Image (tube, rainbow, N blue to C red; front, side):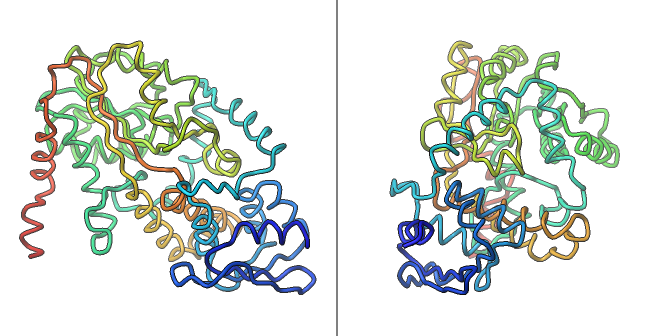
Amino acid sequence: MALIDRFLDRMVQRGELTVIFPNGRQRTFGTPDPELGSVTIRMKDRKVFTQILADPALGAAESYMDGRLEVEQGDIRDLIVLARANDAWEDKRSTLGASMPRRVMNAIAHKVQSRNAAKTSKQNVAHHYDLSERLYDLFLDADRQYSCAYWTDPENETLEQAQLDKKAHIAAKLYLKPGMKVLDIGCGWGGMALYLHEKYGVEVLGVTLSEEQIKIAKARAEAAGVADKVKFQLIDYRDIDGKFDRIVSVGMFEHVGTPQYPVFFKKCRELLTDEGVMLIHTIGRMGPPGVTDTFTLKYIFPGGYIPALSEMIAPNEPNHMFVTDVEVLRLHYGYTLKSWYDRTVAAKEQIIELYDERFYRMWLYYLAGAETAFSYDEMVNFQVQYARNRHTLPITRDYMIAEEARLTGSADRQQAAE
């Protein structure tokens, strides 16, 4: 039996994967499962074997991007779901891990890229966030929220509503009051900063290293007539001066880099007033510290890393800054990514026109792989709240719940649904 057959025999236990090999041989792996269904793929040359055996995720990605691996029944998402469902994190199987030599190379690449000095940080941000603004318009919500939404009814609510609810969920944890000064680290296209000013009248400074994002964020503030209160700056967080009552950071901590965690927390403490509060919203891993997979480092987020919860706590400890609340959002990003994937598929022709077929396939693989990482692997979202003073915040979470209900009108929505 060929090595690729042994690998697939071991990998596919539930659901059926039919493989058409380059010589025309056909074989079905696994057993019928209504939840996972059946997927058929065609491997067009033997290089697909070696790539997948060396590093299943990267090998399958590059083979699919190059058109040497075709999905003939189902789509690439169905294939990735089938693979990940058979390798769920809690089952401790780990059949999709790279070979030992590749794992060593991956670890070295991760260590080098995760240094994230100021110069390389800007380059890494540009690699992803300075893509065509048209691309993001095609699959994000109208406010361009490029982070995990907050879903209260995944079967019925829209992405737009879930992203609006995400902003409210975060704002409620900031315990904001009119007149406060807020720093938004990694402000994206400005949606969160504009929302906080609209709801609370606070002054906000949003910072990013993306030239495309800063251009759009500033234009949005000007168009809303609030550019004197909501300002945006192209600057590294390490170079910010001043004092802020609140710091919010959504989807940016993944780009800090593990060697910079102590620097990040020390700087944030310095920027906060004595009564300051910070809320970090980030993708996280349920297991111990790890490394970033090669596909993500190479094609999607160079320098990116998903932290373990311990890595958000220990580097802050020398600062004597309180961790005042921790929430784990387990499935919310999976729902968000599924919505982005569906919108990407619907925009296939426009994306190919913007870039090419290979880019479109890469983007599909990225979104499907990320979605299943939340459905079957160890990925979650963490929202961690920090405070400089133990007395700043109420001693129960009731204030968060009440404020979120006020912002979302959830009681009215519930009444209307009934």
